[in-house]
Image (cartoon, rainbow, N blue to C red):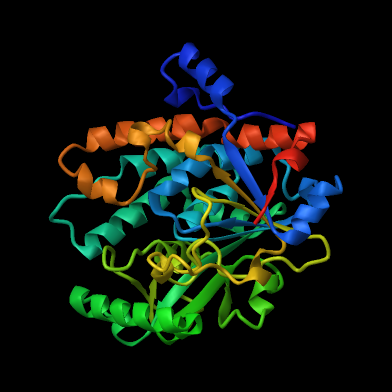
Length: 378
């Protein structure tokens, strides 16, 4: 491996850092049937990974920070062929940092700026959208976008949801009514969500990403360029009800664009082309939720064919108990600590520190060959 993650800026003293490193043996690894067979046959290597998926998990993405930085610094992805980084919302924010000329520096800045965000009770949806806009500007320079679009190791796919009818309105109660109707229709039939939202993927690949050619894709793929890069990223992060949407993105169909997690929350596509290729996903939990509207449908999960080529890494319950108050950072923390943002910031920084070695643990499993011993079938 070419390097290891340094998270000294979040660690107060060397003793704390050493104790964490010793204790970190708490990641879980699950694999779809095809990947499981590859691992058991001893054939896993990072060159098989063709897609790395970033889920729309809100502040829970902070648990993925150490994993991401380990992969970035070790340089294990994209050596034989470019790897597709496909993400919506928080996942897209993460992967946009990967595309930059100095990806580790950009990623660290994203962590810093994201944790520092603060909202008040008086914030409007337009004000919240502006805050996200400022976040994006803080770690992505306009001058660096041409580099991102021609990155040789990584290709980016930003997933957005183009809202239809009432869901396209920024009037909160009408938008809520549309989401309620969408929940009912989606609960009856998973394909009915497309009556309310259209999947629109903005990508930097010279050819269409494989998953955009699937029969289940039901959307449009739009090339990324300097004019729409940040607007697509902003739209994918425009959380419904909380933030205003982004209207009329250059090069894409006219309309209102919202959080990509509405359609692609954790995983809701078959990203792999088969033939031994692997889709990698780091998630904050074991359960995979297809769309944002499926959160309360405990029985809803991605179709089995989407999981066949998936390798998923997630923290164990024992690890979660090590986090502040034994809970994962979540969007509700902005409201919970609205009058005490320093407390939230402290908790989230601590979560980043505790999560810092999850990537090293995974790299260690691969290097030592222990991955075959610990992997479970999905």
